Length: 211
Image 1 (tube, one colour):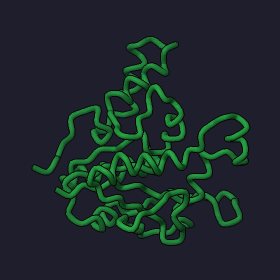
Image 2 (tube, one colour):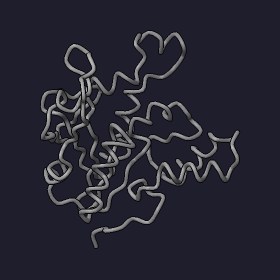
Image 3 (tube, one colour):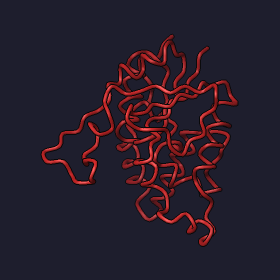
Image 4 (cartoon, helix red, strand yellow):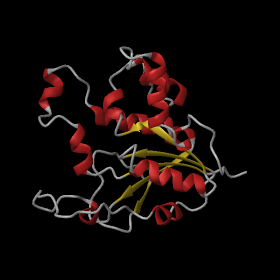
């Protein structure tokens, strides 16, 4: 059985959005740095459990913040980051910008035959969801590890929840609904179910799974 963990777009532009602008603040405030924990979690959840780790990159950007092992693979999108970004090289917002996404089919084809696919990376409600849904609709047993999307930077410090060795959709749901403790419990669950209604998140029945 071929199992793959696919991590989308670990590039500097995305990663630095979730890091302190001044690295010394982690020490000053007594907060663990996220990237060593991210790397350790990928290793323990996936490499050590027989998954091939694959990173998807834009051809005009390098891997950032991730420790690539010799056995890992890198695949590339059919568009550049500059084509996908709403901002130009000088940081100015592009006029009349229309979002352009990588071709999900070309990404999945680069993986070859896959029995089980777990997807993480940037961003959980957008590119990660799009790629995972395409894989699922193509007949691959697919799940998004929400812990290892951009939401990682929100959850990794919560020791009562975050486990470097495993991911559980059910545990994630309980954790998220608990965060709405000031809301009506039924409303909190409805909100969660609306936001995570896609079967790739693992909270509803998955369809088109390969037999």
